[in-house]
Length: 476
Image (tube, rainbow, N blue to C red; front, side, top):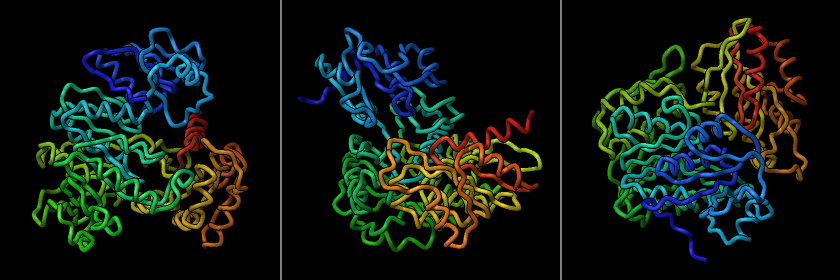
C-alpha cells in the first residue's frame, strides 16, 4: 500500500493513538492549527491532554477499538504501539490509512520552506530550545516541536504562521530517517539504544542516512569531534558547517563540502556555573555570548544553534538576545528549589554516561560542598551495555544513591539490577549505595544531607519525584 500523503489544503479527521506523548501532542497541535479535526487516546489524562482539549481536540482516556470513530481518515501511532493494540487493530480492519509519528512529522516538515531537524545522541532538546529562542527574538515566528517543556513557549509546541519549522530528530527506531530537512544538525554520535541498534557502527550508519536525507543544496551542521568526519561527510549533496571547540579542527581536514567553521573560545563561568564565550567563524569574531545554563557542553550546543540561526537570517545581536532569554529546558539542570539545611535541589534528564559526565562536570562550577547524585538507570539493556561507562561517569559525584532500574518498555530478562552498577561504581573508586525504592532513598537522604550540598536527581524515568517530595515535605 502506498504511503498516505496529507493535503494541508484539505483538512481531514486524524486520530492519534497515544496523543499525550511529548512528540505526538506537538504534531496534533500543529494539525489543529491547520484546521484538521483531531481525536486521540491515551492511558491517562495529563496537563498535555487537557491543553489539547482546550485547543479543540477530542481526547479519550483508555485505548479501545470504539475510539476509532466513524469518518476517521487517518490514524497516527508511535513505535510503542503494536498490532495487538485495540485501536491499531480496529484501524487496520477498517482499512483506514495509517502513518507512524515519524512519517507524519516528515510530511509536516515538507510543508515548510525552511525546516531544521536537530539530531544527536545528546543535547537535542537543549539545542532545539536555544534555536527556538533565537528565532523568537528575531521575530521569525517559527513553528516549534521540542521534546521537553520549554517555558518560553509555554509547553512543547508552538504553531507559527511563517515558513520556519524547527524540530528534534530522534534516532531511536530510525524515526529520523523520515525527515528531509533543509538544515540538519548532528550534535554527536554515541552508542545508545542498543536494544535497537547492533553497535556504534550501526548507529553511525543511521546518522549518515539522516545526513543523506538533507535537501540537496541544504546544510549539515555537525560537531567536528565526530570521529572520522571526512568519511562521514564524503559524497553528501549538501554543504557542511562544522562546530566545536578549538583544538579539534584537524578532524575536518579534507571535507570537500566544508562551508565554514564555528569555534567557541575564551570560556568563562559565573558563580552559578553559567558560561560566556566568544564565537569565531572561520577565525573571525562573531561576538560574545552569555548563557544562563551551566556546562561546557552547552557552549557547543549554543554554537550549533547560532550556526543554524545565521543560515536563517539572524544577526549576532538577535542570537545574543535569544540565548539570553533561554533559561533551560524542563529537566535539564533544572533548579527545583532549596531545602533545609541549605541544600540546593537540581533535576536533570541525563541517562547516558556522556550526559552524566557533562552534568556532573557542570555541577563542579556550581556552588556546593558535596555533589550528591540520585541516579535512576533507564532500561536494562542500556545499563548492561554501558555498565562500565556508567560506573566511571558516576564517580564524578561525591556520593551516589541508586534507585531501581526504570524498565520503560522492557522486561528484565538479563538479570541486571542497580546493585550490579553499585558494585562497579565502588570498584572504580566511587562512593555509592543502592536502595530498593524512593521511600528508602528519601529517608537515606534526610539522614545524610548537610548545608551546602548540591542534590541532583538524575535519569529519564520518574526520579524527579525524589527531589520534589523532599522539597514538599520541607515546606510543611
